[in-house]
Image (cartoon, rainbow, N blue to C red; front, side, top):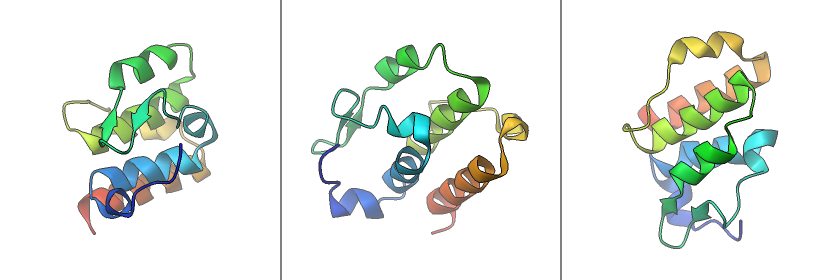
Length: 102
């Protein structure tokens, strides 16, 4: 992904998405212009879900959490956080905080 616009870094819906995609290795691997149009503020959700089909449960959870924090139409089961390691739990909680508490 090219330079991230400042207004997206400060947006309550985009900030948690960007945080997760920059700090989780699997998400970072798909944080590119094939799936994101930062100039127009869009995410190709269907394409991301398609590429994530073979991913592990925890990798899919992180994707689904990011997409849910971006748009509530994308559902996530928070109980699946039980499968995350400490690093990804911390990332998830930071993203949730960015979305709902800042």
